[in-house]
Image (tube, rainbow, N blue to C red; front, side):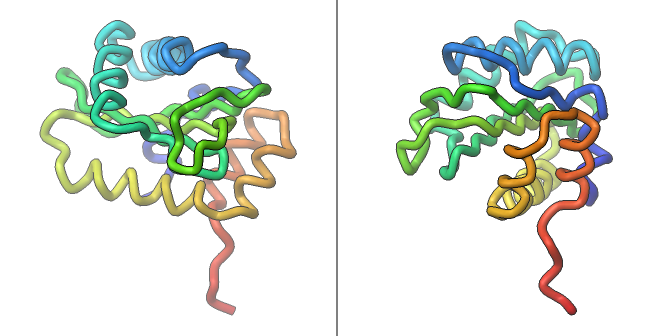
Length: 154
């Protein structure tokens, strides 16, 4: 699986300024609506429901909110780099500045988990996160995400 299959180039945003997790979810829902035709109210509600089960802040300034939605035929994603980190109740209690949201069809079981694992592997890499934090251009951010972690094979 390739991140470019789930991440539309226009769904990558840089230095969004938000004051809360709910406002961030509203911004993610708007991006999802603009790029994938997802109903923004449904997206916000689904993200909040999932977040109530447990925070999706995975540590080191990264959050991976995700939700399953009706009327969606494939897994899609949105990425936001925040100019000011926000509290996300992350596992390491650090504020979040890199956010990759996934939206999946209700029936996407294993495929949803594979997509989440791919995004997690990508954003768990300290070098990828450093590059993301040091770049401003949305096209460059997309290229960094697509490139992903450096291969261990030589």
